[in-house]
Length: 283
Image (cartoon, rainbow, N blue to C red; front, side):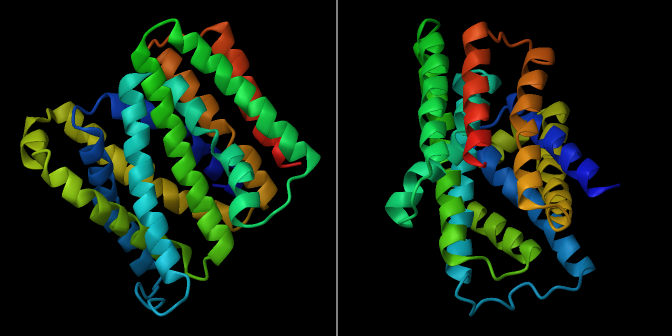
């Protein structure tokens, strides 16, 4: 399979996360924890296959930032799964995809980077898009606003992860870094999960829920990350950025086609503004 087909396939897989999350009846925190735990053996298998030394980077200056980013990934997953519970998958996805805009806003503050005129324009356009989505949701029920807020928080966590990587760099093999991030995601979520009665929730899962949970951990996380990183090495960063816009597109298509979620004209316009703004910011 070519690198382009691989990354498109990964975007299809990631675009379906909302559908799977909706069909697993455990708490968002336990769902994020389970996703990390299930994916760990898959990632480790690829590390062994490629004969990498897992903890050889422990004295590397990038080790601590990678561990911190792993904790943030765990929290970002919880926020996103919370968003799916309170609002539509489409709304949650679009709010989450404000991530590149948050990076533009935070970069001048944290990294002292200057914004170009295109980037300033993209921030304004993106917030106009978010206002359209929020305004539409306020006319439906308050829970939608909470869901959109969780989606936005998830995007903010990912923006911080991007900035950490940009600031400290990642001089660590990608697969090893992914394993450590998943491990730290599980570590940060473990205390929260213990208060929720995880064993009881797992036992109450029916066969359908168990299968969906395994797919979420093995396919959506372990295998998808492997495919993404293998294609990432062979494509330019611009190409990867452009293909990443397929993720929210597929997410919305699946939400409408499979879950039967409504998607009105204002949401469409808001989505176009948000996704369009991120394209402008990359020019």
